Image 1 (spheres, one colour):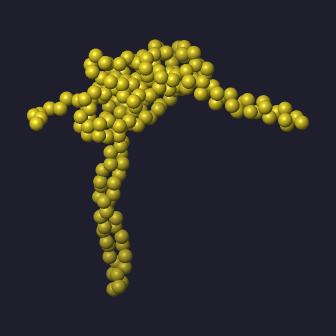
Image 2: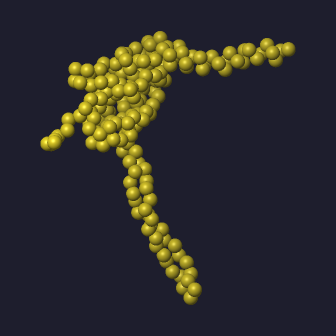
Length: 196
């Protein structure tokens, strides 16, 4: 009988953190719509823009696709936490695959009993991450405008800084979460040269 009384208490203890996190996510829904856009420059909000609740000190990685001859503007904001303005660090990186020749050397004994060495070369493809932009090297700029010369898949890494003032003022249930918007905008890029 005592086990039955303990069961509802255990269920509440397990479900409470999940409810708290989902409530934080709901409070941060569509944060990106409050970020400053650049419509005057001709940019349109891209559907790859995201919003979410992040714990202070967290790093989030998002994959986006950018298309050839399109100009993009990527910015990070937190309208509910103005104390974080100018403190977000983000990087734009790409996984690049390169072909490399690997040599392997084998020693063996031939039919005459003489030790021989055989070297074989094999083409191997290695993937490495190349950082295309890092805002910490650009005076912590909170936006970046670029044009891609080919269609590619990029990774945007956003670091949410710790608040200096202790608890966040966003009104979130956990108090250590910040609502963050990753705004991605696009417009047709400038194509240089003569066109027919």
